[in-house]
Image 1 (cartoon, protein in one colour):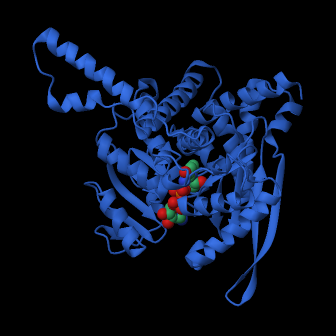
Image 2 (image 1 turned 120 degrees about the vertical axis):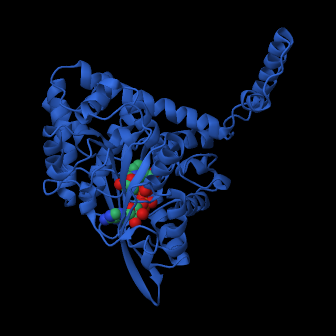
Image 3 (image 1 turned 45 degrees about the horizontal axis):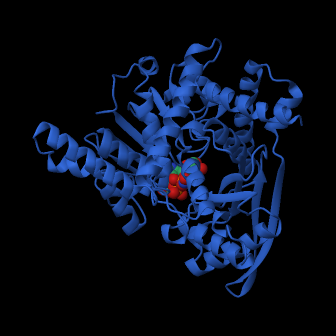
Length: 466
Ligand code: NAD
């Protein structure tokens, strides 16, 4: 899919939801259209010459501020792609009740072609360009990692912003997804994949929805295909296989695929990928491309990039359930074909909202300057200890040692982050399922999710009267 049709796909879904909500055309147009897109071009002196880079930052909606959205590094990023992703961020935050507007950014670069010190220099220069225009700031515009970026880039950005604003008390809150020792939060790296897991768990608690897929109850034993073993794909499949008993039969990567009907050891494969830079050489490797998206499976998890399921292959998809871990992996045309053939799709701006959810927690942590759980953890432990002592003296029995340790421990930051994340993902899925099932004329979960998001944004415009 070209990036223009990515934006069209997002807008078509918006139009369908706005129509069902009976939204006036002028308000619909206001919500749908990106408020601003900034294009920055800057030079960095590298490899004996001046290299020019192009960066984008789109602010889609400022109905809440700061606006929030990742920055991706990719060779083919362009304005349409960034605007489509920024719009998805607006709808994602509204759906999950996160008080941010939507934004997104990109730098046109292939990070694999640059050395780490060069990438640092480029990232710092990009940050200066963003800072000059108010496109990075704790109160207005807070980037995060996305494809091709991670903790390292966020640490460089935060550090550069702090240098430019040495007296800014909340400077760390200018980006999220930072390393733990640099203002980050426990559980941010795993957050999007963990959110995919929580969403699937919630899906399987909704028997009406499961029935529509023809799948048996429960996640245990479900055969899973994943495309992309990056941050999101790796964590989602690791947790689904380790905690829920899913069987990951296919991992599709850019240089081939791993196939094992008995289940792939995701941790071992990922280690191999980190060590060698490729999945090649791992048992089960085959030289195959995206046609394996069409293999037989119970759950398909596209977790790499946009537009991979489209009018050319949608009719051959055999998995009855797709969860969009990536942004925009199914085009509007692909979506229509899948809907007609009864495939259930959990849409991207619900399924992958775990990242922005934990980013929200990180931002709060940076503003409050205190680790989650620091005040209450030991007090909770003491309360549980007293409770156990009471139970033991009343029953005359000793609490089993393993249970005692679990019951007694007060909440740590990671416990609280996972709890908040699970609550958010379950709440969002439950809401879209209710709208899908209980309202007339709602054709699928994507439309249901969009209706909830758009209605909330529309209310915020109506209540301020502009
Ligand atoms: P990443 O860069 O960590 O991983 C992407 C993976 O996909 C890499 O392993 C890459 O080799 C693989 N890949 C790329 N092209 C491929 C192809 N054609 N076929 C198969 N595999 C391919 O990126 P990520 O952060 O995991 O993001 C993946 C998707 O999830 C993107 O759409 C992103 O916008 C979305 N997302 C990410 C986050 C987050 O917190 N990182 C949050 C929400 C949504």
